[in-house]
Image 1 (cartoon, helix red, strand yellow):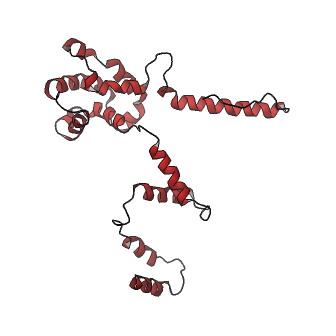
Image 2 (image 1 turned 60 degrees about the vertical axis):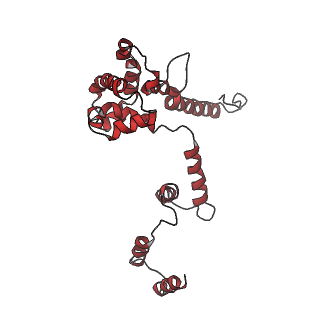
Image 3 (image 1 turned 45 degrees about the vertical axis):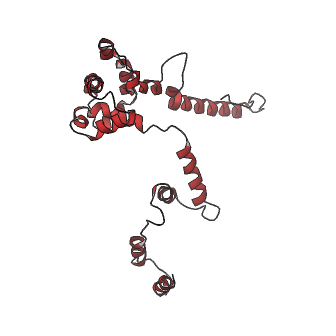
Length: 221
């Protein structure tokens, strides 16, 4: 998306420099964050590399299968090295597990669907142990968002919660309320008893008759 606007007409040279610097910083940050997801002169992106984890793209010939996808796996390991290491993944064993995984799937699980294959490998022994390092990459692939719908729902929840009458909510409180709204149970399944008990046992000052009012409200409901 081309940035619009014209800063050359500004009279004050110092302000002009500040605006140009701010734009440059923003563009560089966007490129650093999302540049790997954009095709550039035919170069394969990280998202393209994940295609190698689809068995339908593997070659039929055994000789070609042994070397198929090695470069893509190396690119994925390099790109996600930090989260893989933090998850306890042994980076050096991923390529070896990748070779064994291809042979295993081709010889035993050609009839499995895409989702069924990865579900079985990640939940059943001995596969989830024998291939636990390469399966870390599979888990990253499976949680990649395919749309911005979740983000839009988050914005909607924030607008509902932090409205004009509750504009002073803190960041942590807003985050907690948004998480409850987006990921919490339905009203039919929610049990308010623990929260009510905690509120009633609080030592903070309340209305003198709040306990009797609460009991009256409960009875009336």
